[in-house]
Length: 251
Image (cartoon, rainbow, N blue to C red):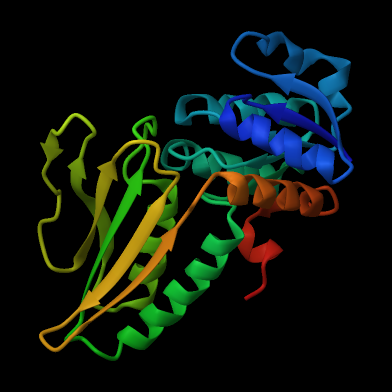
């Protein structure tokens, strides 16, 4: 399979290493200093482009890839609220393909399935109040993380007593704290921590007067994310439309 890489930071390099080890070919690498390569024959020849950039760049990267009819696998977050409807329309009506996930880790996919099932169970036990938090490295631009938002949306869907998620308390690397936006008990705040080089920790707790149940996913490195992105690219090469990890992993 011919793969183009959009974004060549730590994730891009790790994806390249794993893709090559699985027998794929990297035909184009696009970063901030060679944006003109979106117009190259090499980029247009890709079966799939794997995109890991920033919330500010992702949307335009999708449009540039779609203009060349190149399918995209993306782990960029922070663009969905503003551009999600348009991208979904391009994939459902415009014939384009985007496999998007807030997290490509196989472990997170399993964790997400457990989260959905636990929320379904806990819907019948209102004495348990749910809380959640996420911790990431100091370079991460968005808070809460896209993965945390996805997990929170799953909880809200499963719990009748929660109507929405909101930004929780933000603990920045410099020690500053931004207070939660929670205004009532039907809202689920996501507390965020930025610390050192943490790849990603997500914890969800159900607490009652009697006891507390907590589930946690703790990523040891970015390797699991990179492998999942390559697996997603292999899947995307033979599928089309708006795709996500629920298509790739059937739990």
